[in-house]
Image (cartoon, rainbow, N blue to C red):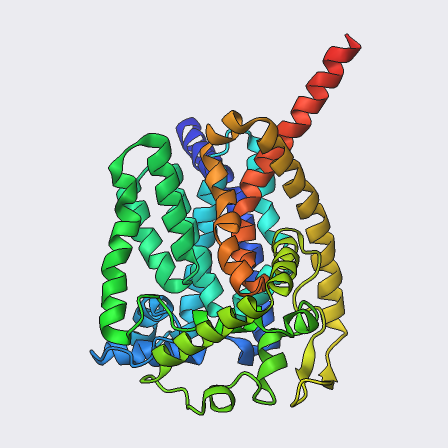
Length: 422
């Protein structure tokens, strides 16, 4: 009887130590299930299913406008009939588990717990989970890669980085920058495996799609980000819809061409050239926009776009048409996100200040890698535009490191005050 009770207590103690992670998993799944039940039509993105079907039929996808990674990750779920819903919950839960493991590697238990539960506080993250399936996959691949990085597994980290770059093409800059930084810090050539592997992928993309990029929409994003009316559109309105509705950014309107898998690479080049020509024609405007983009990327307080609804630029570019506005629950979500960002921005600013004062402390802590994606992607943001949905996963991943260094900064202040009183 006594031995049975001891065994039962040991078993319960083993489960109890994971209660925070179990609680977070249950709450996240409950929130997502609720969102899916409220609006089941928002789930998933059809083009991943189309690509997955092409791969399952042993055909190379004809289009490379969107990266192929999400289709590869979703393929097993489409093959067994689970589709987007099954992939969504699997990768979301896998990402949360990996994120929890990253938090557990923080030695201070209180900071680790706060970092874990902080994932529940970002309302925009839950919106992305339901409406942008690729962000769930990005969260999973980044959590996997950073867990392997913190565990010092460079080969697996490199492979995870390649997978991440095929899910969100901007992650190419994240993992290339990380690999170069780690090589400079530790002088081990194994850390250069990630960019070396990507060269192989780039040659494959070039052979298949006439573009080394994981996707062929980078030129279009540069066109939008350097457009003379960019400052009019951003950050208040959805920039894609703002220019697209009246055809002011359509390939038919600009180049007399239809977008097809065969014309994607050429159109991408033309959009990129036009975007750079905008910057060249007015470098002062481009510099002003760049400063605004950097501020919005690093310290935005609002969800971008700030005004939701059907709002677009009229043909000729002289007036703005407002077809509809959405408020109500969106306003409540906006207020919740603004409150979250207020706290986040303060802690982020404290972290940056602490890092500038104590760089050696920063570099000695492997969790500092979690902050770097926000900065490594900044050149892309300055060329294109800093939409919140592109940043939100980086922001979620950075929170453990931000909390860690913000608490250290607070401890330094408290210790200094105590020393002064003595």
